[in-house]
Image 1 (cartoon, each protein chain N blue to C red):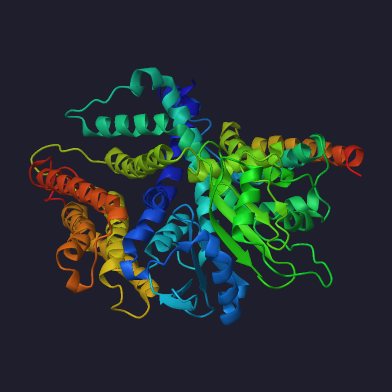
Image 2: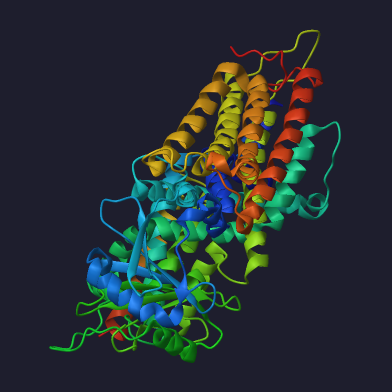
Length: 527
Length: 106
């Protein structure tokens, strides 16, 4: 390939990477953690806040009494079907942070409870979608879509730059004296081997973040103003059941809804029924669940009329005959981003691909710094360029601050439970304090000392997660608890803390005894 | 000698110039081509424009075309050529879309 082509794409790769890399690091690390959102939810939910389950056959009685006694539940309530044959009912009331649950006591009387559980998992999920960019959800998503355009450019240009030496470089990991060579080899092998995953992420995030913009342009030049009507009519989440004047508004038993979904798609396992406008004309029930054999959007779902039990939308019900090829393609786009197919092996696969992606962006920044290094000539270690000090401190502060902040805010979901009034506000406070303080610390102390100290913070913050569970196990009187169903969170955090501790040792050793003509040496001085 | 090295240097980096102009041409021209391509997909494939979820696939076609064109825009020798090339491609794309809308959509 012509050298001028390589040169131009090398420049494109460098600058798109350096601009987009740190936001993508946050999105990928938080996204990897989010793959186990349900398990994280269980980890932060105290035993007392678990909703009582009742046999699914008793659901009609619970629903009827709840809707009569609590009009707020009519707007929307959720019937979770888990474990099989059992159900729990919950809803939210406007302006209140708690979830309310209902069941019937032995005498058939309605019992309701307010459940105050942490939303740490949702907080981390939103962090994943917006990279924590302030200004609200839509701004964050929009910025991340633009970041993803740069990310797409970085992928194309990175492949072009690597192509001429692909065969030679791909499986070579030259560990040795030439550290830059080793980092470059690692960056290349991770980038090329997980390329399909990255292509999926780059394209889908542009579609998620800019879909409204694209739709509004398409509406003008393609659809002649009819698009919003189409989008509304085909919305698979929200619809209005056809209203029959003077018709009944009595809900059919949930078992009948489940049965008609199963009849449509025998292998699909419904796990939750979300009722909207129950008791009013036009009510709907959204049935979510999973069939791991399909590339299904969010695992698969359908929308039904809860009064007649008829389907309103089954385009995204995997295995049903309703969906056309366009819906199947749409399902695949969503499923490939979220890993909502193939069950647990895919979930773990996405977890490790997400962490590998975070490594890719981190190593990209390291390579930028190493490429600008001034080598030692003579007795004194030379001063490195101010830009490399800046980038090194920013990289360390953002990446380690993000990891430590996520660990700390998750641990707080257990430690602060029942001790503070507004836990969700505390999650944001804790994350941003740790994150911003880490960046400030990295700049004050410099990248060499800062990386060692922030790795100690990250190790400690991550250790808090299994520690909180251990304290709950041995001393339940503290109000903490151990949740066996979420023990995987404790084990993973322990392994993670072990990895950070190992990095801490290696980093401290390098800073003290490694070459001093580097921003990573203890004798490095800025300015 | 100096003339020769200067020439090889300029030859080696003859693509590395007009960054702003090429990038803008790629961003704007790429978006336009993405929209035109999605319009052609929506109009020329079987079924009406409002077949279930066809609009979704048409929207999802925009990002790959957009990013592909943005990436290719750096291969133009100058910024002006990028604007002319991508402008021409857009004119062609939207002309085809207008024809497709005229003949296939009612």
